[in-house]
Length: 307
Image (cartoon, rainbow, N blue to C red; front, side, top):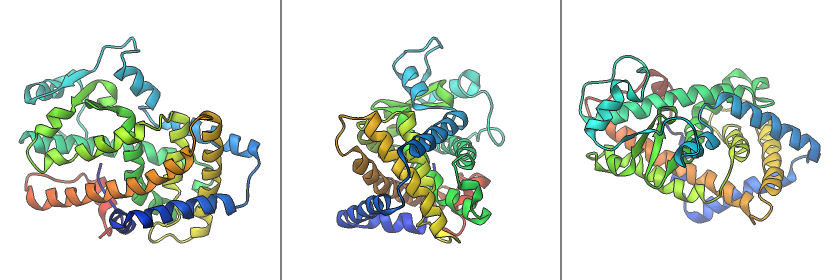
């Protein structure tokens, strides 16, 4: 769960007044763009939702059923200390190891490695999802790459709360559950990797979004016209405006009693950028101070030229 952009740095450090300005700008763009018909927006929402359910392996519905015991499958194996982590590694949770054998190193380094494995897997799923968003594959290939490069971590952190409750998070497609206390017990800086994500998740989960809401929200994150280096900003903004209109309409239908849920959700875009900024700064610190750590090649490519 690693990576950042120049804009992420800027938004991460900007004061609350400027964050509100960002949200106001998105609201204004959504209102001023050419308004699609209600049926067109419903059709767009359905296509995006279907693409999300098809390409994202761990949906919120699936995760919540596991976390609340509403499934016939075996409950997840609880990872709460070093012994249970190694039990999980020996076939109880992870069926296979991505990119070679896990490093036989200290526990914090190993958890960092597992975070990377999960991130790489999710980046690949998000790439397939993006290609199914109407209009995405019509963009210049360079712009497709740029949008994914700068957007995947915000998208990942928007989906991560689905796997979390206040006590921990699901891993390995729901086969394991890592406790929050165990992650806190790691030595610094590794203990600082997940705690900000839990704090964000508590607030984000209070919105009570479902997968159909998240599908449109994640699509809006990916199709963001202010990413550095885009060749056709207008085309990207047009697609995002349609997605934002569809999201606004869908939230009104899906959450009729939740006032101001659309602007509240847009505020989370600014919060996500700050979360990505802080995460990337931590990863850079780990890279510099922890000689035994290394970044997966895909994540190295995402990082490239971001500073």
